[in-house]
Structure formats: structure tokens, C-alpha cells
Length: 326
Image (cartoon, rainbow, N blue to C red; front, side, top):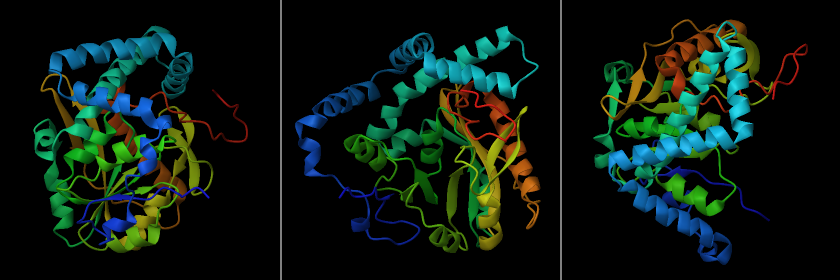
């Protein structure tokens, strides 16, 4: 029987879970089926130590390659953009899609930095704007929910916040070696973190943890079906919007702060921008809560439209009168 994925956690973690309860290296990863993955891992090590200029150049090539040869992802991105910005010209939509894939390629090439570089090295390449919003809410001896969205540099956002006690989630890779290798980089020995697999997540434990000085780094823009969701506009199109975060905030009394991460080509740093708390959640009006969530997401996504993950199936769950768009 196949074992379900486990969390990745540092020795110090917000739930005081034993390190033995986390995901571990398996000798099975040495079998021939994983040898090609080991080659890719070795190449990622080389990439992580290339100078910035070469990584940027390779990233642009990768982004252009994906745009021109991955018809599936290119078409998804263009469909999402056309649904979200119905008044945008075809030329502008196309330019936005091209820019997105350029940033996506760069993010692919920069990801090995997270896998191989030390936390101190990575922090020199990260910046948080408005840390005082987080510190002010934690000073009230309660938790903080950081409400974020899928940008191409999402994992750099998690790394930039690693000085805090953090709970988060991950979507397991089918390749178990790759899952272990990437997952362990999210729980370095210097951290105070636990990252749960999405299908094995204990909301009860998170609610308990958020009653003290803990951060829940929550990606709020996924379409996970109709359960715990309501339809509300995301830019110009109705979207299945998760509203569980408003329930968690109500039960735990945690503050909800929108945030987002993007790469700044001027400073050459990964910027995590933290916005003011959302204070208007309703206990009964879930449509209102979904509207608040989407407006907060939109506001921060607009900080750099090109770096949002437009190639995700954002609108795969549809209202009854809407056709499947992909």
C-alpha cells in the first residue's frame, strides 16, 4: 500500500511535532527509476552557482521556449487573460502573456537557489516591505494569516518570511525523489516551519496554533471545486473562490494580511509586499467574504501583472450557465 505524503518540518516547528513525523529520504530513491532525476538535481546545483547574467539569459530562453512550444500552457494563459481583462486589446493580451512566460522561465532557473543556497545567502536576495504590519499583529499575541496568490516566485515569498514561525501547505509532486528534494528546502535547519501536504492538512491544529504568535502562509487563489467556495468575480470573470480562510480567521481570532511576492529587475531582489489587514469579514455573508478576498488578491496581483501564474486553470469550476473555457 502506497504511503501518503508527510509534512516537511524543521526541528523547531510551530506545532512541536517530532522530526520523525516528517517526510524522509528513502533508499528507494537510489533505484534506476530515479537516476535521471538525480542528473537533473546535479544540474540544478550547477545552475544555482552560475552568475546572475547567465541565469537571466538562460531563463529568458526557457521562457521563450515554453511560450512557443507548450501550446497547452500558452493557450491557458491567453484564455485566462482574455477572461480577466475583457476590455484589453488582443495585442496587449499577447504582450502580457509573452512577458509572463519570460518571468516564468527566469523563476524556473532561479528555483535551484532555494534548494542549494543557505538561508543567510537567500535572505540577501529577498526583501519584505511592511514587516511592521506582521510584527504589530503578532505583538497582540495572536496569529497572522498571510493571504497570498500564485506568482512565479511564490517559494521565494516563503523563504523571505522564514524568520517567523510558519505553517503552510504544498502540493506533492508525483516524482517522490523530486518531492523530497524540493520539500526539504522549505524546512531548513534555521527555520521554524511545518509544510503540510494539501491532502493531509489538519485545520484544527492550525486554528489552535493561530491562537498564538504563528503565521499561516496561505495561497488563496486556487480553484479546488465548489466545496467551501462561492462564485465571485476575479477581475472580470466569476471564479470559484475559497472562503475557508474567513472561517479560520473567525475561529482563531487571527489577523488576515494580504501579501504577494514578485521579482524586481531593478534591485534584482525578490520582494514580498505585505498589505494592511482585512478587517471586514462577515460571519454570515460568504459572498461578501469572497469579494473581500478577491479584491485583496487583485490589488496585489496588479503590482506586477506579468508575474502572476496565468497558466493555471483558474476557472475550471464553472457556474451552471458557463462553458468550460480550456
